[in-house]
Amino acid sequence: MDKPFAITLDPGSSLANHTGSWRTSRPVYLDRLPPCNNQCPAGEDIQGWLYHAESGDYETAWRHLTRDNPFPAIMGRVCYHTCETACNRSKLDEAVGINAVERFLGDEAIRQDWKFAAPAIETGRHVLVVGAGPSGMSAAYHLRRLGHAVTVTEAGPLMGGMMRFGIPKYRLPRAVLDAEMQRIVEMGVTVKLDTKVDNILATMTTGGYDAAFLAVGAHIGKRAMIPSGDAARIVDAVSVLRSMEGAEKPLLGRRVVVYGGGNTAIDVARSVKRMGAEPIIVYRRTRDKAPAHDFEIEEALQEGVMVKWLSTIKQAGETSITIEKMALDDKGFPQPTGELETLEADSVVLALGQEVDLGLLDGVPGLEVTDGVVRVGPDLMTGHPGLFAGGDMVPAERNVTVAVGHGKKAARHIDAWLRGVTLTPPPKHAIAEFEKLNPWYYLDAPKTVRPVLDIIRRQSSFDEVQGGLDEGTALFEARRCLSCGNCFECDNCYGVCPDNAVIKLGPGKRFQFNYDYCKGCGVCVSECPCGAIDMIPEDL
Image (cartoon, rainbow, N blue to C red; front, side, top):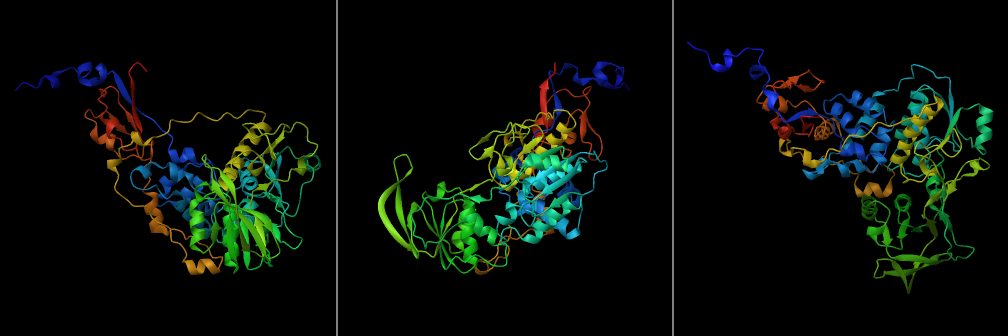
């Protein structure tokens, strides 16, 4: 019996073994940048640690996460998780609860007492870090990992900076803060508390430091010109929140007016509510223009905090204040109306922003200070060689996540500067857009909602307001990740290829194409769930 024509071909011929010889474009595997990773101010590889978390390997996930951010339990509570705003899954159903899984991993690490390893090699270089807040301790952590000796000086009595003295306990329990601070100390970082640096150059010379990172927090509250009598009690929000850490709570009276519309104003109002006071927030603009996050405002309203929108304080007396109502003009800006109202008030708390004490920089040549912050280059180095700065001290958004990211970035540039080289970040991959995905491959999976403390307990205690996920819900939430732009070895390309041109390389090694067989049909590209394959012209 004659054999079919194809089988009688010489196995070495192009017709038998090189079906891709007429191909005009070829598929290539690639990695795209997940939008969550791109959005994270701390530079976390979110998709990378979620990959380990969804397999139940929580310690590996935690260690992958902490390559970039040493504070997952803290960040899982205070980060505003803009990564979730960028999450592609939000266009399918709801964003992945990245922040909730991060908190679970951080809490699990504290429960299991996971530690950071000491560096394998010591460089012999010594770096000074001024400020034991999020930026300073992040820098200390990354510098220590790189093998440098690190000394942190902190003017206050405890580590944490504005995380401790600016974030209430109902948002960040102090046991969690202390655990993640202490873990860095145990790496071999020296922390000197109650040690204020008055002159940075003198301190560096005396201590024999090779470089310094300045991370002084914005601990000085801004004031406002409010006509008031001698008996009027006007204090700033930072002082109030700081005093919450002491044994003696601030004596503000029963009727407390908080002036401002940012997150600090909300924190003060919610804190004094828990102390039995009746807070009223006065803010000159509307709710949608308030700098505070809307979910914070909503929680405050739920707890019984009153808000006077479109109002400004005209005068403060011993037992009352006078406010003037505002109205929006045709451009949307608030304008005074002349209509006055009197509110009973035992004290007024000014929450109008904070400033940094830059006294330690007096006399430092080469520095440029503008609008109360220090100008730095892309490497976070100031105009003075070897002197770097980040966090509240530099022009940037002021929040914990940004500060942590500054610490990591500065550490890497300090390390490069000490080695006499310039650090050049690798180019970023193209962002994995939703249009590159095949969402119908993914099952519907509604987002897991974190439990919230009931209103009655919230109004009367500093217990943590928002709960965390348990292992089952954390695992479920991690598995909702779409792995945007990066192969997760689903085998779709392997299964749909009509030419058997896809080669499996083994678990964790992904795939490769055998271009002798691939005819460039593009089925693998169209069927890849996560958009990790692209077609390029053959002549490339």
